[in-house]
Each structure stands twice: as C-alpha cells, then as structure tokens.
Amino acid sequence: MYIIKKLFSGRIFITIVLLLVQIVWTTLFFLRLTKYSVALSILFGILSVLIVLHLVGSDMNPAYRTVWIIFIMALPILGGLLYLFIGTNWTAKQLRSRIARGHDAIVNDLRGAGVSDGATGCPRASARSRYIRTVTDYPLYDGSRVKYYPVGEAMFADMMEAVESAEHFIFLEYFIISPGKMWDELYAALRRKAAAGVEVRLMVDDMGSLFLIPDDFARTLEADGIRCLRFNPFVPLLSVVMNNRDHRKILVVDGHTAFNGGINLADEYINHTHPFGHWKDTGVRVEGEAVRTFTAMFLELWQAGKNEAVSLEPYLPHRYHPQEFASEGFVQPFGDSPLDGEPVSANVYADILAAATDYVYIMTPYLIIDDVMRASLVAAAKRGVDVRIVTPGIPDKKMVFRLTRSHYRPLLEAGVRIYEYTPGFVHAKSFVSDDACAVVGTINLDYRSLYLHFECGTYFVNCGAVADVREDSLAAMRAGREVKLSDCRPGVLGGLLDSVLRIIAPLC
Image 1 (cartoon, rainbow, N blue to C red):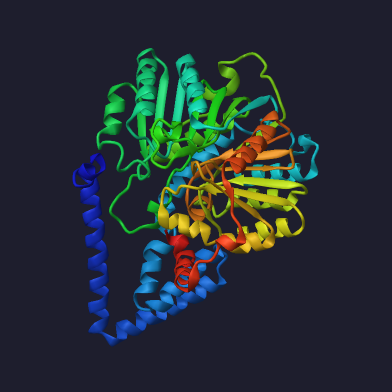
Image 2 (image 1 turned 90 degrees about the vertical axis):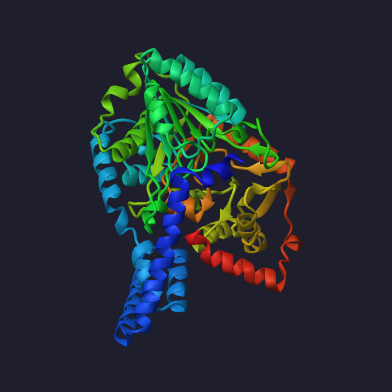
C-alpha cells in the first residue's frame, strides 16, 4: 500500500509520466517525420547502417553489441537514433569526469600503501593482485583481518556494535534503504552519534531506493546532522547514465573497521521479514590497513556526487588507531566503475576460474551470463575443476529467475554443478577457490552488475575466512537441491522465450 501511494505522489509519479511522454512523443515525431520525407527516411536508414558497422568493429561486450544490432535491424529508422540516445555513454561524460578527478585526488594518499603484489607467495594470486592494482590503483594489504558472515542478521549485530563505538566518523554507502526495524535502529544510532559530534555521511543510490524512502529523506537526515547524498538522482531523461547505479554496500567506522557484502538496509536482509523465504546473504568485516581502500571508494563517489573536494588523509586507518593492526593473510578491496571501460569484476571472476585447479564455489542471486563468462565456467569444468553454483530456490523476480534457469543447460552439459537454495532467496555474491582465495562483495553474475553498476568486492588470500566461505557454500548446497539436466526442458515455446530473454538481458 505504501509503494502504491508513493507511486502516485511526489516526484516518482511526475518522473514516470514525463518519461512516458518523452518516449511516446519522440517515437511519434520521428515516425511522422520519416513518413512525410523520403530523404530523411533514407538518411536515418544510412545512419543506422553506419552505427551497425561501428558496433561490429567496436570492442564493447558482445552481448550488448548483439542486442543493439538486432534492435537496429528490426527498427532501421528509429534504432540508430535510439542507440545514440540511450545506447552510448556519452551522456555520462560529466559524471565520469567528476569521478576521475576524485579518484586522482584520492589515489595520491594510496601511493606507497599496502605490500608488494608478490607478497602472497602464489604467482597466480600475485598476478591477479597486480591486475587489480594496475587498473584500479587499489593495493594489496597485510596488517588486516577478515571476518565472514553467512547471514545478514549476524553482520548487522556487529555493524551496530561498530557504529555505537564510533568516536570520529561513520561513512555509509548503500543501494537500498527501506523503513523498518533494521533502518530504524541504525538511524537512531546515527542520530545519537551525530549529536555527539561524530561526522556521519550517508550515500544512497537514488534509483535503488526510489520507491522506498520519502522525497525529503536527505533533508530530514541533514536536519539531524547527518550529511546525505542521493547518488545519481533519477531524472526523466532518456539517458544511459541512469543505468549507472551505485550498487555498493559499504560501512566505514573511524577508518579502521569496514563492512562489505550483499546486505542492504532493509528488513528482509536480516530475516526480520520473509518475502521470499529465508534470505541467504553474506558479508565481511575488514579491520586494519585495507580499510583505507573502502574509505577511498566512498570519498571518490561522494566527491563526484557533491562536487566538492575531499581528501583521504584525515580518514586513514592509523589516524585513530595508533597501535599496530593484527594481520592474517592478505586483503585487497576493489571497486568497479561502469564508466572506465574496464570490467574489473568480470575479469577477476574469470581469472579465478582460469587459475583454479581443485574447485570454485559460487553463490549468486542471478545467473545471467554473457558468452565470455559462460566460456570461463565451461572451460574450468571441462578441465576437471569442481565448479558449483548456488542460485535461489525462491525467486524475487520470476522473469529474471526464468532467465537464470535458461543458462543452466550448457553449464550442466559441461560438468558444472548447480544447486537451488530451496529454503529461500540467495542474495549472496561470493567466489571461493582451492582453499586459497575468495571474493565477497556486491557483484552479481549478471550483465547489469558486471558492466553497468558501480560495484565493490573484498578479495582475500590465505585468510581463515576463505575456509569459512567454502564451508558456508557447501552448507547452502546441502540445504538446497541439485539441478539435473533432465530439469532443463523448457519446450519449444519456452525455449523461444528463453532465447528472447537472453538477447534482451543486457538492456534490462
């Protein structure tokens, strides 16, 4: 009822109406224009052909390229123009520029931090760390510890403890905030801390929480002494930049403690409500030197959103923790931006699969993969690696769940084992391999997460938490059911629907 009320009130309703008007007006305008002008019709047709040729020669993701080529061929007049409006990222130029400036300013305080990429003692892990540092500037650290959480409620308890202990600053960055027990308890603690003089900043993705928080959300928080940013505000403009959502989940306390994972600030994430059965999520707490990267990632997007200069130096780990940090293994938090042309998360996942010799266990809410990721999974399984994937047993979106299942058959035929978590919905995003390394973060195995969203993850090597991720993955498999090849019989019409869904997936 709350969502329905919100839908027809305030900026949400206005935004939807303006978007629909814009789409209908643009379509009718060009159809009428080309109807009465043969020359313009030919011109638009030539433009579409040139765009298709450009796409064929481009280095963009093959799945994204294919869907646009099909769309332009199906609608030769409008297709090219629509691609120019919503298919390219030129409209994100201003945001890209602000993020680049913020990154350049922040990264100066990361130079010299961390340890050598070769410190892990494993050539392949070292090469992976070198890649992450080279393309993101985020280093590998010792002097850090990782604690793994197999459910959101366990992580939330420690998040609240950390917030209550904060003495200097609290940074929060989330995709979804929804009123309820979880947010209300955290908000009350943040108000108390802000009143006590602790610097509190909160960044929330505007689209992710569009139907959940009130229009005056930011003003209310600011009145309570909490600085607030609604990242990349949703506006009624046909633009690809609206696709670039901040899907990260980060909490940083006093520069030396951080939380990362799939857990948003809503009651289902801590199993206080059960819209899709048991909500299986995961996260990590990082303590020590590696927290500086989470702080850096937060400040980069904060600067881009607020367009204000920031510095990492006042928020470094040792500023409020002069003692040496305990150390266990190696930790490398990393971020992924859709605006730099580098699919960091996809490449890290693919490299883990390519380097594995024993096993790779994966948990993901969505299995909507492109040809490159499918080839990585298949190649690993065919050379004898035990590749297993855990997906939801109860979906949050039925059509997306069908799309996930449409990818099962080629993976099963190659030897990948797939389990559906029958107690409920899997929102966890994790890779663990060979008892040596793991990634836990916000990164789903779908096109939107790997190529369109701002994401982040925690990569760790030779930590005790690696075994915890492995054991939790196996427990999730035991709690669910293994999918068999005989389960994958969609029929003729179902197969056609699955093919259509796979084609349009990059645009969804």
